Amino acid sequence: LIARPAEDALQRSWPVLCCQRTTANPPIWGVVMASLATSVGAEPSVRFAIDYAEEQPKISDACKNFLAYRIAQAKTDANTSQADADRAARLTMLCGRKAMRAVNAAAPATGDAAAAYAAKGDALATRSFGKSYLCDPVVAAAVRAVPADPAMDGADTEFLEAFLATAGDASDDLTWAPDYAQVLRARDAARRREAARRAPVRIEARHAG
Image (cartoon, rainbow, N blue to C red; front, side):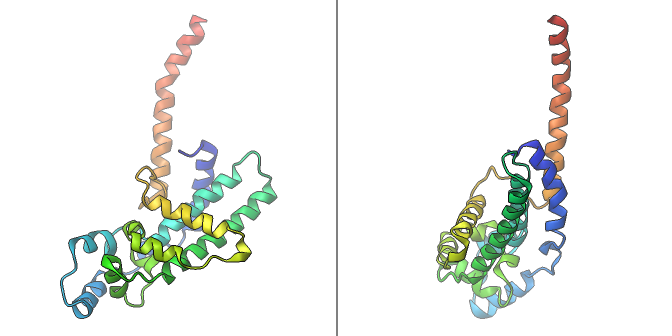
């Protein structure tokens, strides 16, 4: 879980980072189905239909969520100066762009991932697919095979690995939330309910003392 100051920072920064959501883009399912019918010559598997083409949020949206999370962490770290936090935020944004380029450059050659990649046509993988695409080991291997940028001194690799890990982390309810702000509001409401529940106990403890 994220500390309260970080969540407050997330609520401020998330709308700015995510002002253009790819979920507003026209659905690609019709294009995918037509492409599969002609290029693959068979109906797509149920797994492909559910996991890859219709899953929300898309990879690019999840990356924006992850960026907001990381930037908020840096800006609310008591041991980090404002200047260092700003530098960390800029580097994080660069790493996010690099990660999305790596996902789009990866070309899986086998399995459902290869069928998905071929069927999407000219569309970007990051705007076409959700977390199950990244969870596919063929895709993950192809993404990791994209060369790192030596100038980033390993920061891009660390970010990419951390982002890939979120796709397989069932406990991560922020990065892959279809509505990121809603998750933050729900957490805040739960925190308020818990505070209200504990309030009588604290009052009784003070009187007893």
